[in-house]
Length: 256
Image (spheres, rainbow, N blue to C red):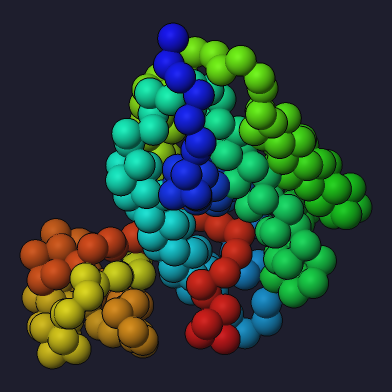
């Protein structure tokens, strides 16, 4: 039986960040792609038509990609602890804490403080849906994750490999799904790899037959002139090209 060893902060944060990223992907896939209840900036005046809404949704998912990638990197760098006693329970608990933290933050910031969207805009009383979502997907996962994280005497089996594999598979499935473009998308958010010069990025956009809407610190918004050609952007140094119907939160506010 594996001996109980302390779990490092790096291992803890891998779970927190992966859970946080999965929370964003979950909201985007369910609320914006499947149910289509709102966009990221549905209640923000001056954003424009649905094309701009999709663009800002895509920027949010670009941020979730970064969060999930950092979480995966931390998990890989601390992989030696996966065999430790109770590692699987700790990882699952941390992921649930991160998942719940995303929904608590989204509810407090996006729904009630900034008011950029609500869970269900077409509901007679949107607050009811906000509270249900806050409790079901925010508080419940946080409480379950906290209980799973509690130390238990006597060690126990690891199951860390199974837990890590499950988290990695969930992220690997959710992330590409969240980046699926709607059939009528005419714009996209593009994240270029560090070190890409503005001139190289402009050349990549031109090669993709697109126009630049704006750009800032490696993040570009482009509009396709005719057919979307993301492959040419990737060939020019892009890390992510997305026009996804995602949403709930953060990066788009840097442009308002």
